[in-house]
Length: 250
Image (tube, rainbow, N blue to C red; front, side):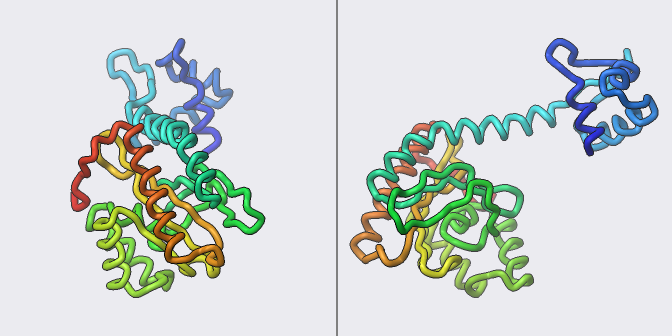
């Protein structure tokens, strides 16, 4: 893996395509090793070879992967000011999460100033069927993927409720536009989460407020729901969302 990455890093804006010998020299690897690794990367679609001059170059697959990272960075920068404002208004920890493979990952967090507060770890991976942040993301996924993940969670014994109950919860989230979790994934904690949409109407993140249940009353829960959904709408609008959702069954 380390040697393959060294090869990829040989390509630059000034030198976007190279011969085998050039890559071997820049990577300080033998020609046989470079040739073998390039063959694998071509097979996987990360590198291509020009049939006319035999030079190697990076493929558009890497561009697409880079675009995902760029989109995530843009999302974080757009969302952060709204997250800070929300945290100041509700005095609870606010997190922003995205889908990473079959997991939910927190990519940004604004921590509450309260002594007793919920701790959110940036980079933490949680199954998509556990907690409000995850379920909001799962609820807007295509039906086939949604059912596959639920079946896998049921098989692994990791569901926090029955599969039919979870499906009902996901349908409710889509209908209401938010999800809640109380004493669910973490005993003694609650979370309120709402979807964030991009310009194309796809859900790209979930915005979540989380804290200890000791501060939660019926009136406060409603207040948090209103504030979180409002902030999620503001972030979505800043991302270019017009208010039209894409079909979840695609």
